[in-house]
Image (cartoon, rainbow, N blue to C red; front, side, top):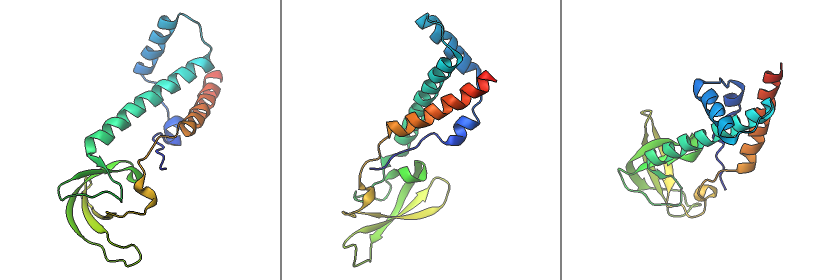
Length: 158
């Protein structure tokens, strides 16, 4: 299965606390009426940032069209998003038959990417590792979040 690591390490090392973050923490403290340590507040903020980034990513995925999978069939004009290209969108502009005896029958898509470039992708390719829908790997993100909590806690404590 594919995993999407949607928050880079740079995101956490370059984290800037915004007015929205402060407002969120303020409201959180009022809502739960429980004092928290700096480390606990950082964990709450990291969870909120991850939640917000998931929403942004979901919108980005939905806006671009169907998720490209090599085993699927496509038509000219179909809008696609590419998980391994950071969900970059593109549009199928032409389709031709593939010519590789080792792979069997398949099609080659010419896709006009949103950045103006054209790229080629296989379709109707039955046996391919990328034919599974991408999924989020929670443990991966939790490990990153724990690292961010530690990093931010050290900054706060100093």
